Image (cartoon, rainbow, N blue to C red; front, side, top):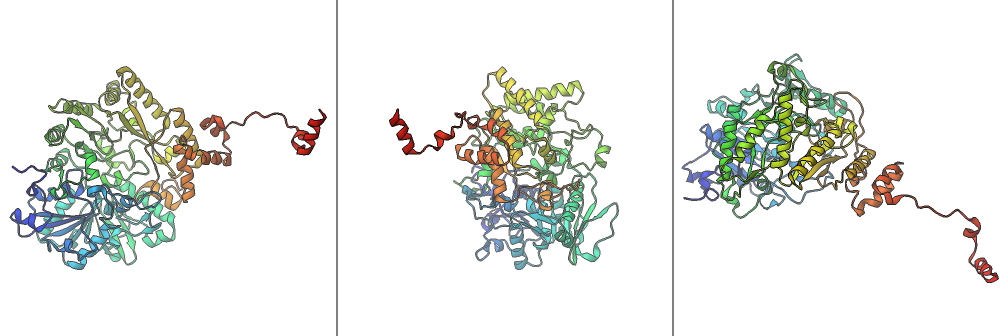
Length: 637
């Protein structure tokens, strides 16, 4: 029997030869993706392909097609019976390609060997244009995070301009945003029944481009956003639009959003209700090999190496961080898998040919939101809050970590599992929240202790993001005092258990509202905690986040207040240098900067040796004495 890592018949076909081996003469759907093809539930193209396959459709996948030659990759399967699917991949291509300083990256984690250059900028647009030129009559369906987060007018940091909805640049027939299993099946079934794609304009969780004449008047079920042209003329209008977009994206029963672009309008339909446990299980239980396609034999795909022995337990995130796109794509309502489905996948991991006994992550977008939801669904149905944790945890939120502990223990009890780790980010403000229920509070304390004692691979990563409460408020993150509390728990458990584990905090510089002085204070506070920071980054504006809208417009979408933003290269570098106060390369620049902003008090805390030295009293005669006069004086003596 051929091992799964070498048997192409266990995968979606990527070539005509592989299609023939399956006994097919043609396909129903062809998926184009900017990523390598990894048949794993963490890779979107594999999920969509397997979902369609399970419904009886013949699906082929073309990973990282060459868009610069004779376009043979776009021609090889011919016209599919139903539609082409197009995705840039698991990341927005511009985030994938460029740093926060707008420098081209030298690698690509979703490509064999990590090499760059295998996809264009904006592949969603490039691939779609090619397909429409070759096959003008075949429907094209957009999906993936690039299309999802660019479904309406959005600020593009790398071009430093407001771009229209991606549907204005990519001539697709329909856009599927968010998690796409339900949507893509509805589209496939409709087209299979002979229903034209133009008749799917009201399908949930899609966006379509229509004549402007079809835009209705605003009412409770239709919100009319400021037009693209109005937003170009006045960034504050783009900011006002965003509040509607974010609220409706996180609503259980959202409204339809309309935005005019010239003589056309973009209609964005509401999201589906959160997936049920049965629906999420069905997606994760599909027959993935959990391996890269055999075409990559002998090559390493960095993004796969990170998750090859990991298990995702839920989707969605109710944290609502100002700089994060997860809720805009997956929604704030948690869709959790059943314990049985998770344990089943863990057993499959233990049977992998390269498994050594360690599960690298039992997590999700936020590691410890599994199974959590509002106690009263009717209250959640009316709620428009983008975050269930900010400014403080919602009293309706059930924060019981008991089900999570139950799964951890079940996984650790499996034969072949030596240890399971939590590699995803942990929301310590969630696990430390005092609910007033003694049983839940006791369980949550136990969760923190078991997490630290049994599920840390030497280093536990958490994300306080900053130390300034004012900046944290803008970030929608808890006060830094909670990090201090969590660190005390971490240190206590390590001491009790004789462990020498590290707590690794993540921080962001140049976030809207953050000043150079805030960063200097961050350096002082982290020095006092004995941290030499490693996990740091400059704020990168990405489409569809509160922080990006503040950066673009200069005002907060919810308050209308002006917010300072570091914009120039020098301003960003001035903030970033404080992360590395312990490196002598940066010391002189930091000392000069602190004197410039008149914070010598912080200078003294960072570098006590910079204190002014005690000098002898000033003696003008001696200091002004010439060389010859000094010799004469010495001679007289």
